[in-house]
Length: 468
Image (cartoon, rainbow, N blue to C red; front, side, top):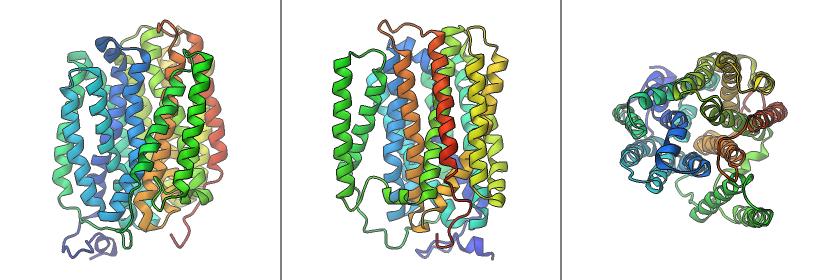
């Protein structure tokens, strides 16, 4: 029996083991639920806005609430897995995701839809860090990039299919049926997950959860979203009041985090230069990508008056190239280190953003836009694997789940800011369709963020420390 198989045996005395390929397939299938429900709903946002007669700002909350819940819950979900066992927490997250998906399908109004979608995100946030934690504890260090690459490829492929599925469902049925696509995925994953051994990290069972800190963090991210959403509509007095409230809440949250034994996230990991650089790169890249992902359907439908199928095809191509790149990028990062692929990803994505800045117009060809989005997906695919692995490798194995949750939190924080900026710029006093100048400004902002990500990528350590 190989050492790799032995590493997968439960320390609790279970006499069973799972092969690495089986583990990879199981955790990836569960982890893909969160991005699937993000990208496939992106195509449906204009339809939902019209069907429920809500504003651009209200529509954005369907995305923002999902992202906020993901960002806030992932560090706690990773820590919970470190404490009581990642496989057990993973299975519980699957059950919860199924329940809230069915509830979202039957939601009679916008308020309940928003609630169930947020709870759906909480369940999804439990899955992602525990999936990465199980890979980190079970896969040899020299192959973590390869396995992480395949994990990203599986998840990314689903993210790519998401817009296509969304467009296909909308062509024949109501948007509510999108949530039913989760049912077979959850059922199959639950069946596979019954074989996963449950292991808790030694010495972590006594750790506490700071529920007050988690609540404050959620309130902080909500306020950030409100501030960004009102950029184009609030009066100067209201904006000043919101910013003042944000400063107070940030200060209070920071004080709380320094005076609790169990902070919301593993902030101490940011003392590690490589972890901080990888997280900064992940935040900026995802902010740029998610802003583009959500801006594209509104540009195509409200400026060029094209159908949802075109948006689904273009976004699917972007996510598809990202997924195809991931396994190759994982193997390359195992060979040459994490830093070079991370820097290369920022530079390639920057080229894509500049293509959009130069070419944006009312009569922009879908082919031109598709090429720019494909280049962006290629760049993101190269860097996401190397930066993610670098962040997780910077932490001890006992904190693998917490490190995965914290770096993923930064990823979703970037998405939250991107959605807020997009909503603020799209919202006018009359809440009418945005002009072409708004989208040009958005892509200029995306280019600036990607330029900054080059600097953060340079901080990433090429190889994991021996003590990790």
